[in-house]
Length: 308
Length: 256
Image 1 (tube, rainbow over the protein chains, first blue to last red):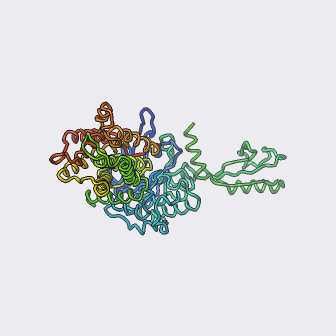
Image 2 (cartoon, one colour):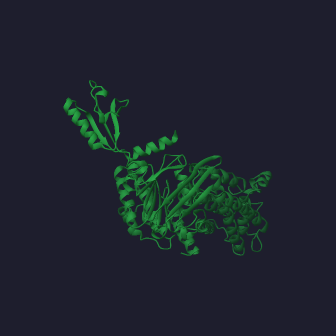
Image 3 (tube, chains in turn red, purple):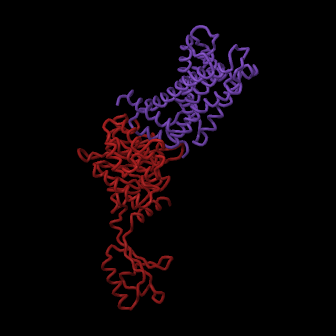
């Protein structure tokens, strides 16, 4: 645990949660720093929602220590609630109230709420301010939900799968809103199962699988992604035997689609030798591709490995 | 905002939501009025000899009983289950709004609508059907309204806990109250109901609530018209409902 400006907003140590006999969360550690967008990733049933709901003060834990904004959420008071904004995984707003009325209703609960008009504009519902929530599209309802979480001007926001069910343009817009929260100095704990969302928004990512943390880091170096190197792959013409490949590519393997693949931390020299060899032999390396493992590759490897 | 101001804030929005909901307004306001006109039209201008009152004088407290139960138990149960399953109750719990302020807003809304219906049904009875308005029995009427509201609001919170889904809210609530309206003399004059059936209805609070309202409108009632025994019985059901609600009421959706 740090001190001063680096004092963690959320600190979790050895958190456990058991439903009857079944363990859902098996002793996890977690630290969320002020002003960061922290993405919490994991497959369904991994313990994601259980963990978030314990942090939000909705659920009691079975063991371990939890501190959110310096308090134990299990014994949170109203002042603590005023500093925490929540977007639940699923919530249908009161259909008979307009966007503006809904925000005024919630604004009344907080000691120092944000301006309703400003918040409506922030989430891009300016034109729908006088439309009843029951007449909003699914994406607009979700944005209203995000607006409600912002209305109290909380320091910490829990967003549980905020863009599920959005079309691509609505998702882009929501990302801008969430990225804007960082500029407002908010700390965001974002649950998602979209890798591109975590890649686009998160300062740090934590991956949970089967109730345990399997990796944590920035999106770029999660799970040793930085060191994992690049993958070179191509289709070798059938007339060429694998043994004829140059030495630098000797470690390559052929996958079940007949693609030749290899991993390397020195793609430049390997590629140089490979293409030089191909030019010399007059061989066309079809579908030649160089790529880094995506966050999704790393994630699938991390969570898949754990299931085995 | 202070706690009381929060409760009033909540109440104002609950009022707005109630009056914008056609189903709630129909079942709470229109439904009792339709029955009042229906019964008065079908059986009007007759005396119920055994009770010494006109049919209209019998049905005004009957319909008031129906209206009070609708505004409290029925309306509250439905709106609580719908809001719970939509995730709104859970969302309220994630804000600094105290749980009691939320409950006060809902209960306040129910009592205001119930009181409005008592006035409306009484006035229609007086103006259109020549039913005498309670004068010296006004304390009995008001106390019955108060105790009845408490009891049937408590039962609403308790019943909502027993209803698993939004779809089940209307059938379960109606299946609970509709038979009791018939058995308790609300829809059919009690003089037409066999003794045994009335004894059975006596086990439930609707029958006693009706007797209290009837006493307030019965010209033969002497004094303030307070039936302490019946009121205590109604209140006991309310306390039981409250105890169940405190243990079983839930904010989180059940369907997940």
